[in-house]
Length: 175
Ligand code: ATP
Ligand code: MG
Image 1: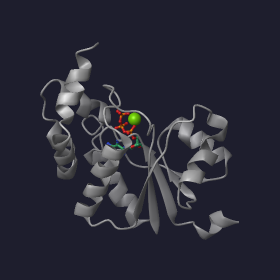
Image 2: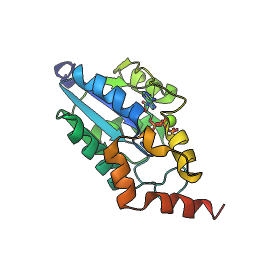
Image 3: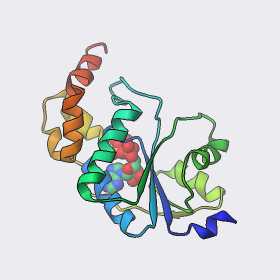
Image 4: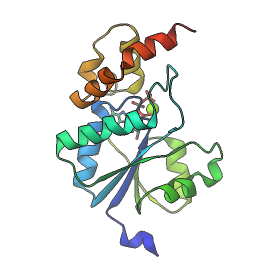
């Protein structure tokens, strides 16, 4: 069936709130080992909350502009909304994505669901995890810390363009 023909086509999924240097490091490595790499933007329907500040379109732009700067040309970007029904989630992802047979994930639920569906799972190494994490980037955004050091330049440019810091601070005021 189709999967065998796509043994060097890979998938990685994250929320990318926002896309940071840890994501970029791992994507740089995976893209070298893959014919194509699909980057799924998870929880695509959420935005405008402190934990999910950016829209799927804004996250798409962050990733696309960064890949362009990096010279990575074998990646597809696919927004994927949550279904909240895990038994059919893999089919949902497959229906939204170009063909792939390898899934890179450290998330236990993601791994379990793709293993049960017969996909090959590979570990992706974690780079500088204490700093390169979406949670840490958002924390620094809220307290005027150095969030820029943790994201690619193209991501900082998109965040500046949409006044992302004004947005996340404004949302935090409501809590
Ligand atoms: P959050 O703190 O908001 O959950 P996150 O940094 O965990 O953000 P996600 O958007 O949840 O990032 O994306 C998770 C995906 O990104 C996983 O596949 C994970 O392995 C990968 N990832 C996240 N941080 C790193 C990192 N520092 N190095 C390598 N891969 C990373
Ligand atoms: Mg995470």
